[in-house]
Length: 424
Ligand code: 0X9
Ligand code: ZN
Image 1 (tube, rainbow, N blue to C red):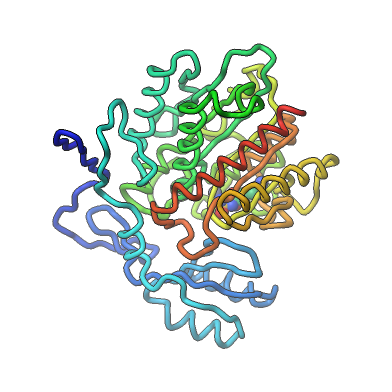
Image 2 (cartoon, rainbow, N blue to C red):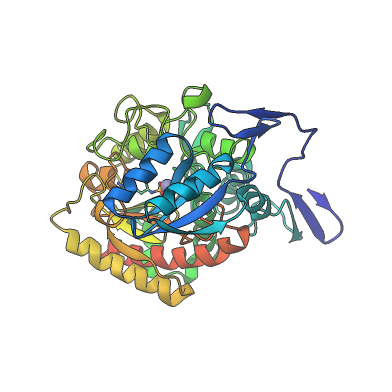
């Protein structure tokens, strides 16, 4: 940190050295070990039929596009620079309507995160909610909390990632023995930077204004892991902004999708056996240290678990089980009612529209998710995946200026879930 008397400049990014260009087998340009997305475009397609989806799937298999988010009503695709003309032809030929949302993804990436921010006389930690921070800043913040609020906050390491990074868990508790418990995690998917930023924002609000929170919030034991996939998170900062999985293995086909690795109906629809794909579920349920750390902690801890919340991005959804297929649990009405209240609290707080519903029906079937395991195996009454902003204007590359508005809405969401948990 560079400091004058009152103002500190926090340097967040890393410097650039002389560029040496390389190309991956995927056709991406790598400069100084960093994947560049110069000329890649984000397109939004509309109302894609089952037949038209096949065209997109072919283009994906030929490595001309990759799927980002949304569902068939509005599906976002990333078009590789060399494929722009061919994909345009293909889409026109098959009657798929689309609009270009980001002309040059690398430019959007370069503008997403300020590298220097000014801070007023800050002591004790480097975390802000004006920029996306590196894993070390987030860890430093958790340690700062444990030191500064020893009666309220404790930090423990519940496991180690594939590359040996600590999976840290913050417990916020007033120590009341009758408390119910809520689990929150962020950063299961590396590139969804808004997720850890939102989780730490919620932590900050709870801890620094604990007395002004509702009695429901105060009388819950909060167990919070802001970055469940630290290796992937760091990799998305230093090497490839669009990295999703953990960093198991190496080379072109590294990584397991941690949200396909949880052990409830593992290996079913929407998860892949091919390590080279984005949705590889791993060699077996809980094969990964990051997911097994969650299972071991939750199963061994004996807390009175009531709600499980996983933060992801993007698309603005409140999803509840099941995700593995288009079916719902017997008490889905309870989950639906809370989800409706969550959506309305978000709307009132920040104006954003969040769609709610069972995950497989609302988004797509995908097995091995944390939400399904929490509901199906660990028997949490309420289990949600919250897909944060936005709706595909920036997608994963959401500018840092949106952290505070997004997280303020999410805080309202969590308060609603706390009320439901307290009453459960
Ligand atoms: O596909 C996912 O893992 C989640 N979407 S994301 O764009 N963040 O990757 C949705 C998961 C919903 N839950 C289940 N399918 N279980
Ligand atoms: Zn995700």
